Image (tube, rainbow, N blue to C red; front, side, top):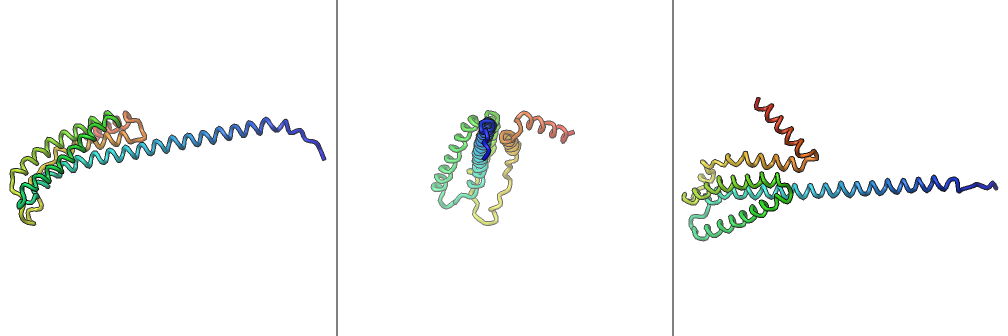
Length: 185
């Protein structure tokens, strides 16, 4: 049986094993980073969606007040006030939380909250002064204009889209500005 010198093969085999180990570790680290980024992005998406939903809930109180039970005014005032307090607390919570996620998104959210409170709050005040609806035909409430809030909603959602984008925020904002300028021309 021939005698082979294995020492000549040992160095390349060890080097190949080290390279394979480094590549495997790099793959594991990349996977951990990508998974962490994905989880963080999903958590932010959920937070932004809940914050938006709270503003929509506040806006709906105009209709809640108009549709209140007129036979139990004291109980309805207490019920609606308690619900509004809860929604206002949630708005304040998300208002504070947004800056920890992104100062830019936080600024847009604060403007959305201010517009929602200003426009909806005024309409809710007016709704309390009107008698509650009493018939099915009155369920479709007319004369409520919440359109002033839509520009703030759009700006907030644009900021959220920018923040969640894989592209840098400055790039997505610049591209949107160019698209809007082209659209208006």
